Image 1: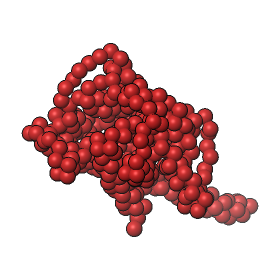
Image 2: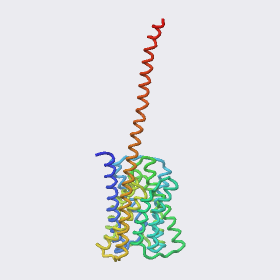
Image 3: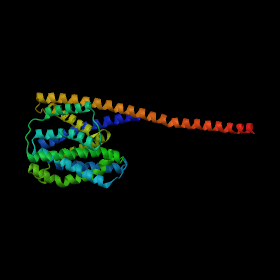
Length: 348
């Protein structure tokens, strides 16, 4: 199996793991928050990150991966920024209607495209842009219902979008710049993400719910779902870094909207959540956008690979031509050198 095929299989595996683990944790957290009324989302996320770090530390001791330190400022800044973005997204949900929060999540893709175009010089073809527009339109139809605006909520949403976009772009660029794997980056940044949310989580949850996470009654059932959620989060956090590292922040967001559609579908099938024609139409339109995005991304990647192979072939041919010329030149010199003495003898 060639390197390209292995990479494609790895990417498909990462995407599948991300979808399965994310949908699983949403269903688990929905049971935890809706049925058992444990509504402390930010604190729960901090526990997720803490458990993820502990599991990775055990994996490191068991030599499942190698520790690769790199620039400490980058690690600390990245970890804190990730923690802040999670907190801001939760605040955005708390201070806005559900519809406006969904619009905030939809805004992440165009914002990411804009930032990558302006600061990283990345170019997105018209076909990719159209596919993203169709995708966002479909998810918007399926999820956005009421749009109630307020100044504070809008400001928090703007900060949440910017910090999330920058954090996801950094996830991709750091892995490439410092040649670290998704596991190595997650292991080093997890403590800073967890510490940020462990410090601010209880205060944010108190602000949003008017309840104290430490005063909650932790029954056996609640503890079971918290532990289950934390275990699933290991896979969620790992697959997030893996997908962004292997693909791009935009592809990760597209995958996120696929998860949203799947959660809506599973909610209707398994939990009998209300489902309307808007949900069905939106999911179908979103699927068209996702399929076209995947198709055009694959097509353009194949074209780039073919162009790179052609350039490499030309470079090899270019490298071989001078050698031929040098050999021909040496042969000519040798030939003239042999004729020289013969001419001299005739003259004498």
